[in-house]
Image (cartoon, rainbow, N blue to C red; front, top):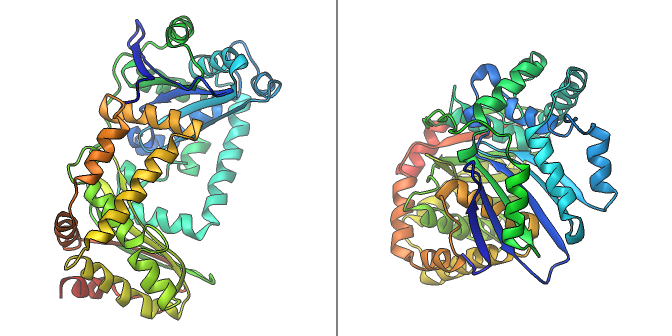
Length: 421
């Protein structure tokens, strides 16, 4: 944590994090609630995302148009997003207009009225959003992957929700969900910019006093299952995801997972990019990733390829995974470490990203970890540890999602045989 990051607790338990950057002209601030789609029952699928939309549709003191006008009249921006375990409402404006942004964020997160007319209009908007995503093959490959890796549970459902559930939503259901899930122990106010901490906390104490729930309900535990889902579609390209259960936020192996992803598919010099795109021309894009949740994670690879190329791609891809279990070089690890460190440091130069990172860090770990401690942890990982991690994870049950012209897709059983041969 830098010397300018300060954390205080309001009298109601809400935490306030400020990261003072005195030379900047703008401020990013917002509210991060540690509740997302993982906390929803099947009959509530999409309610967290719906709430994010409805926050901007009017409060007890402002109409939807007034909310937009107040921010845009000073040249500011306001937005929100919903994830598996977080819903965020944030704004950016010039430092002289910070109070406007803070007032509006406090208003929309505490006093949204869930007007029935606005709600019914927004149902159509959200269903259009869901339909838009369904027209994106990359997105649908991810949806199929999640549903296969985590079947019949919140992690396997779409954050945007189920259209049928959305159609049945009522103002009272929305308000009940807020009152039963937006708890003060899982709310963080985060701000980055030329901010005076004590003054900012006093303003927050006055503005954020209408949350009443003390403790957030516990989300349903994740149960990774794995398997495959191949969907034939008349697309020009095959969208392919190959994955394994990875690491949670707090796993001691999280940096091994991220470094392995960087080595295999983290850039133009990565193994998969060089072997599969540069040498063989089988894909336009291929990358590896290590995503994390509270109690699980995914180590995965995404690739987009052609119908005929798929037949060659899969054996080569699986072979590259196997090679990682036999050899990881010191040079590769050092380059991957440098990439992760650079990404970590550059993220801090983007104000919205910086405020988001600070809030998420606190929600996940109960503190904002210092960049120095993170870099130390990244640098501590050895080539042998990454190789051992690869051997362990690639011996576990995979999840495969393939969407498009799938005629030449390797069978699930053959993938497992090649991985274990």
